[in-house]
Amino acid sequence: DAKTTQPPSMDCAEGRAANLPCNHSTISGNEYVYWYRQIHSQGPQYIIHGLKNNETNEMASLIITEDRKSSTLILPHATLRDTAVYYCIFQGAGGTSYGKLTFGQGTILTVHP
Amino acid sequence: EAQVTQNPRYLITVTGKKLTVTCSQNMNHEYMSWYRQDPGLGLRQIYYSMNVEVTDKGDVPEGYKVSRKEKRNFPLILESPSPNQTSLYFCASSSGLGGTTQYFGPGTRLLVL
Image (cartoon, chains in turn blue, red):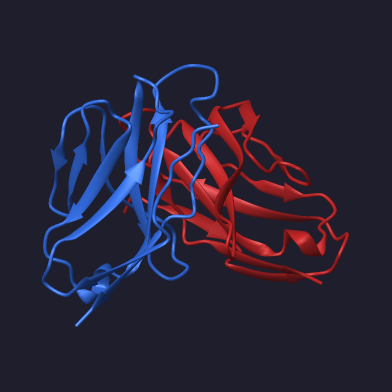
């Protein structure tokens, strides 16, 4: 089963960058790294994803190590509304179990004033 | 508006009384999936579907059934609900796998007495 490891919780001051790490040492070459977040009990919200290269969008940046065994989600200027549980998962583009997704425990990010 | 809808949003039922939670998406997505979320356990995949008439088990399929007769709908069926199925349920859809994002519904909170 695809598994990721994330720290259970992190704190960040408002306005500062939040760097959330994720280990995914069993990732395969055709599997994408995805980040989602969940605010309270709402449906998870997509943030960003990548395969090999670093990615940036209006919400965040994603840094993937060269060996692809870990990645870091960066929220460049965290706000109080970024307080949420952040999930790192990986999803394949093919193979026998590419539809099966495993969410880990996630990281509870608390942004404080 | 592109969205995933679930009904009902809240449901209280009794042990053994069959129920169905509906999920519908208006984005013509091929892939759909059901998750349950419990305190301390994160999101766990129940079933997923690659396309019409194609479904497969996720991590926790016991006690659940699904069907995919139409592309837009993916109902979750509990034939004989038990208290351990009390949970928060999410449906999700995406246009494919690998490089495509999942859109989650708002959730269905189920209490089985």
